[in-house]
Length: 259
Image (cartoon, rainbow, N blue to C red; front, side, top):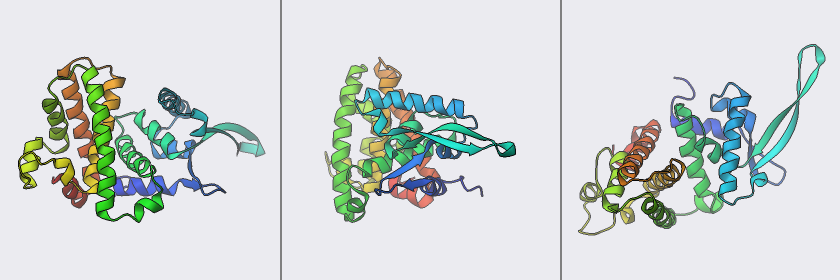
């Protein structure tokens, strides 16, 4: 099996190319990330970086804090040297690059999942997150999911959505292999009107949070204007997240989406 044939090995590779500076801050070099994401030409990969920078700017986040220009000297034949451009990237910058990458590449979908989950965890320190109990992690992720759903609803409304039950079920169907919110509730044995999101573990909440954030960005990016398009987009994103989860292995997929 190729080292990059499953999500666990992708994660290991992303971690393998991670660097730590003298202040204990993690970062990635763009040219190393380029290789892992299977971009052969720097020119094409730098186009993706520029799109990621624009996304960062549009979110009112300071670009140079996440994309730091670096000049490197490499050896050429016959003892010559050449200066090349590189970037020191934060985890958030890597996430934006994955967001703007070629979605035909399987590694891009897995990179999106990996960096999205890790970026969410960075909202508190990794040490703090790792020391939380499962209930505390679930509570933390549930709060993020509530905020994400509120933001998604505003974006969906602007995209023409009026039937929000239909819109949200489109996303659930994609992620849960055809199950609606009611189907999920019945499978979990919940009482009438009991919120399914309040009855998910931290991993499952993270998967749904990723679905929510990705759908909101796609609605904005594609300038969706009708409820039908918005529902189709939500369903498609749900399927993409489900596929990425399945790449993580059968046990993980069963734990997260019962598939």
